[in-house]
Length: 167
Image (cartoon, rainbow, N blue to C red; front, side):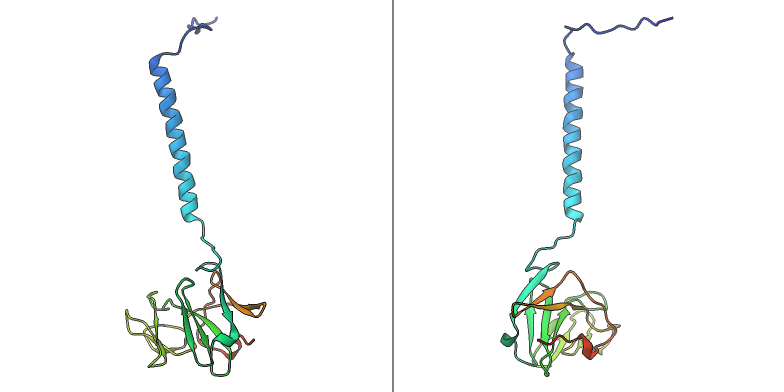
């Protein structure tokens, strides 16, 4: 037995209430899609060459004298050149609680302003509470220029000579 349900006629107009409900649903769906797209964009890692999270070209090796430290603020690292000519890209992030360290040339050390940790030219801990040496980033040479990949932080307990990169 079939129930008597009213069937809309083909030429019957949509009511104002149904039209507004359909429009509100469409606007809600569009808003949800936009919010989801923005959330995905926010959570996606930002990897831009020349900035932190990408590959930073620092220049030719000859432009850095032995025993020097050069800061690269956009890359969030220091390029240290040891007395024997080896290079090390040292993170600015303290291994204690993540504060930004700064280089003090007069003292020949990196200093953390938050809790007083000090690190030498190659990032080894000289004064705790930092539990280990500063992290480093891989260095490669391309067409005579040094390149630092800030997307790949390398944790280390202390300095080892094989961490230095020679050109």
